[in-house]
Image 1 (cartoon, rainbow, N blue to C red):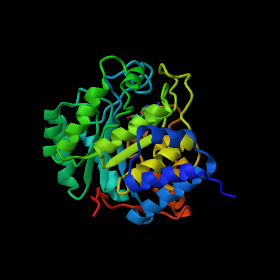
Image 2: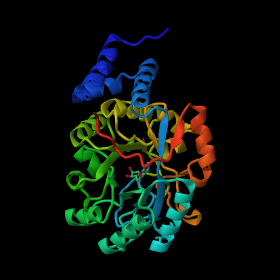
Image 3: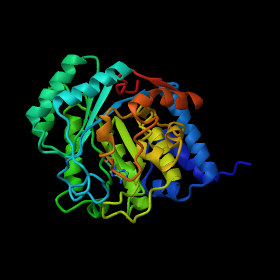
Image 4: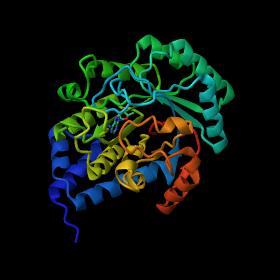
Length: 354
Ligand code: 5AD
């Protein structure tokens, strides 16, 4: 017996129609979620992604090229204050080696992700990007390297970068202050995101689900911010504590709430690119597959050198062997096949709605 209240059906239908709700309505939807409504909203979201993307799941090769970071975010395992990790950064040659391996495996998007590492100047990055574009002109390049100036983003764009990922982390400024040290502000984060859009990048933002001090109101504000920004990609995953951070004793985010938010995002952004993240797969075995079945359509296997992978722990027990690394592509393909999806090795650019 399916028992969804009239009120919940109305809210979901309104979200489907308008791609947005008011803050109060989003809060209502999230606060009154039950299993039947979650099943209903996930199947709607899944139908939407099927309509736009068929059974394709896009793959992106993730290269974690530096774990140095000048920031001290309270949640993150590679924060500056963590003196117990082995820091590394890759040379251009090592990055090219990762791309080579990835290209052979069929990847046509490379995501360079790292901490905010000042040792890579704009010139260094431009030189890396030129080399990548020269060797792999049919590939898209995504950067995920944090906050920079407008000028710096412009130079990176002009050097050939296609996409940029920068999660806003939380759209509530009081909450933002509880997650970050004083030198970081939501205002600057948003400035970066709007600059990136203006410069013509395909832009991704996102947030952690269940980060400490997060309320449903914060999540509603995240959704409204996303509606306003209109990003091309949104990455969300559960918060998972890391033992060398101030949040080591906080509880992880909820699995069900993460799936719910993936579905809400799919309904808001029918043609958006939404990854099923490693943190979701770390929290629950098979979590990424359930993310796909909630409307996600991207996976990002790891192409980083083997010895670097264990040093890039943003949270405890981050998966770094098995289907989430690039060489585990066969396993990943089989896992996706088992839920009726095929990996797609196309560039998978954002396509505007027609
Ligand atoms: N748990 C889950 N996600 C995390 N991130 C950083 N630390 C954690 C954590 N402890 C996420 C942030 C960041 C992205 C690269 O990883 O949202 O933007």
